[in-house]
Every structure is written in structure tokens, then in C-alpha cells.
Image (cartoon, rainbow, N blue to C red; front, side, top):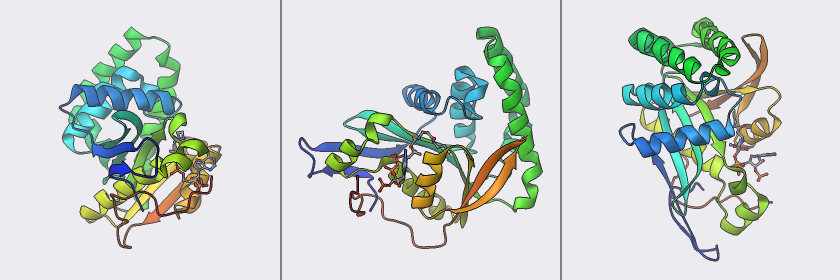
Length: 244
Ligand SMILES: CC(C)(COP(=O)(O)OP(=O)(O)OC[C@H]1O[C@@H](n2cnc3c(N)ncnc32)[C@H](O)[C@@H]1OP(=O)(O)O)[C@@H](O)C(=O)NCCC(=O)NCCS
């Protein structure tokens, strides 16, 4: 069902693709995933802190600490999509702040100095971050969470999907599910802007259970996944018939 590494023989010429976890020691990977994140989710809570913070804190410190993970989907050696996720949805913010408060504050100050335009966006980002403190009632870790996911528009057109049979968004989610299942995580969530209809359709198609939610005063949708079912196989093109 899910692409992992391989070559799609249906495509002319064949398309080479792979999905791989990001290594925080590889600067090129960090730069690539940060750039994808900013291009595709500029309006999201993590991107509001600015490119510098995203690259130096989220995709370096959090990855190195194992509080967050990220994977990159490449097509013919070029980045096409990414996903960031955690197995500690309830506590990873608190742990990150507890461990790295001074460094985070320093990076935020530097971000503002480098580009004062991030300042108004920062207030919203901080509100969103602190609103997570009220989420203890949701349960305990381990709880998986999709923190960010995006696929470049040219890799989600009906033409691309028809030509290659690759559904990159679906493949990225399957990668996360398999990874969380290997860690023994039984539940996963995503918090989606209520206005992001494409993302909601995407999660609905994948079997997510929806609940209305609110974060920092904004209408959101909580999408829940039960991971106790057998893991989808990573490594073969989508078995779902191409409808587009
Ligand atoms: C959400 C996103 C990652 C989905 O990636 P994708 O590669 O298009 O997803 P897939 O090809 O695996 O799509 C699987 C299903 O999701 C649904 N879907 C995905 N994008 C859709 C869209 N724009 N409109 C309607 N349905 C969509 C479809 O039902 C699709 O199945 P189908 O083609 O058989 O109808 C992608 O649209 C994206 O990058 N969006 C911008 C960033 C974003 O909003 N991220 C989510 C933040 S929570």
C-alpha cells in the first residue's frame, strides 16, 4: 500500500523514490526540511517563530533530543514532502522548554533582531505554545502527534499521482504510523485548523476520527487515529486504485 523505497515501473520514465528519517547531524537535511516547512506551512504555529528558530531549535535541538522526529520524501533525489511528529504529544513542549529555555529565548531574540517582522507573529505562536499546557486532561504519553506535514504542490497533482501511483501524503502518514507502532504507541492525533478543508479531507480519507477542538481561541479539529491495528506495509506503491 505505502511507498517506502523503490522504483515505480508503471511510470515512464521510472520514478525513483524513498522516505527517510532526518538526521539532525546533517545540516543539508535540516536546511531542506526547514525550507519545505516554511514553503508549505508558513501560517502554522512552528513557522511563526521564523526560519532561524525553526531550523536551529525545532529541527536541530528537538530532533537531537528525540522529542521530535522528521522524515523526508524524495522523488528522483529531490525533496517532495516532509512530516514532523512526536511520540510525546502531551509533554514534549514542557520538556523542551525545561531543558532549553535560555537557548530558546536567545534564538527568539536573535530571530526578532534579524527580522523584526516576526514580532507580531510571535505573540500568536507563544499563545499557541502555552495553550498546550492545558492539555494534560487528554491523557498521558506516549501519545503520537503529527506536528506538521506537507507535500509540494507539483507532487500532489492528479497527473503526478496517475503517472506514478505515489500518494506522498498518505505514504508519510504510513511511515509515522509504522514508526510509532514500533515504539509501542497506541494512539495518534493531529490538530488541524478548522478552515483547512484539504487537510481534513486528507485525514478523513485515512480514517481519522474527528472532534471539534479549540486552541488559543481558534477553532480547530482534533483528528484521532487508533494505532493498535496492524501496521500498513511500507515499501510498495499505493494499492488504492488511482481515482484522480
Ligand atoms: C494535506 C497534504 C499533506 C496531503 O498530501 P497529498 O500528497 O495530497 O495526499 P495524498 O495524495 O496521499 O491524498 C490522499 C487523499 O487525501 C485527500 N486529499 C488530499 N489533498 C486534497 C485536496 N487538496 N483536496 C481534496 N482532497 C484532498 C484525497 O481524498 C486524497 O485521496 P484521492 O486522491 O484518492 O481522492 C497536502 O495537501 C499538503 O501539503 N497541504 C498543504 C500543507 C497542509 O495543509 N498540511 C496539513 C497541516 S495539518
